[in-house]
Amino acid sequence: MSDVEFREKAPDEAFCSSCGSIIKKEAEICPKCGVRQKAAPASANVTTDWLALLLLSIFLGQFGIDRFYAGKIGTGILKLITVGGCGIWWLIDLIMIICGKFTDSHGNIIRKDA
Ligand SMILES: [Zn+2]
Image (cartoon, rainbow, N blue to C red; front, side, top):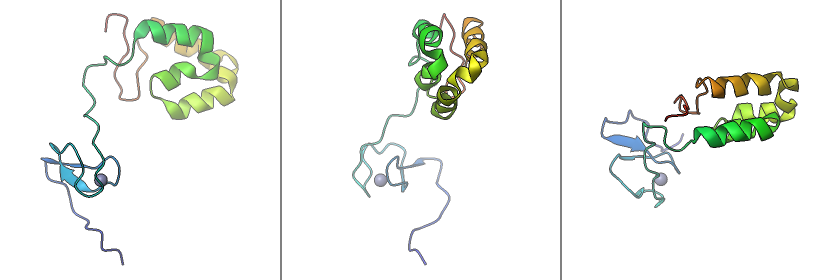
């Protein structure tokens, strides 16, 4: 039997990004493992630039680099292995980006005017 404490986390608590312990949301450093917590991701999609994504998709889309950039590592690797789904997936993603329908790993739509 493990002595790890299993319980639901309270609304003001969060899981440590390193060891998974329940810690206070406000805590900057985990008291269990001492690892500094990453800031919660902002709701606005400011981290992913549409133009950069478009250029990556045009030139490196067949290697899934556009998906890596958007944080979609799993499908990025799949796209890399299949060489952009024989070009079809590459084209679909490119159209999705141009039409402003491409989403990042958090489900935020990446738009030109974001
Ligand atoms: Zn920890």
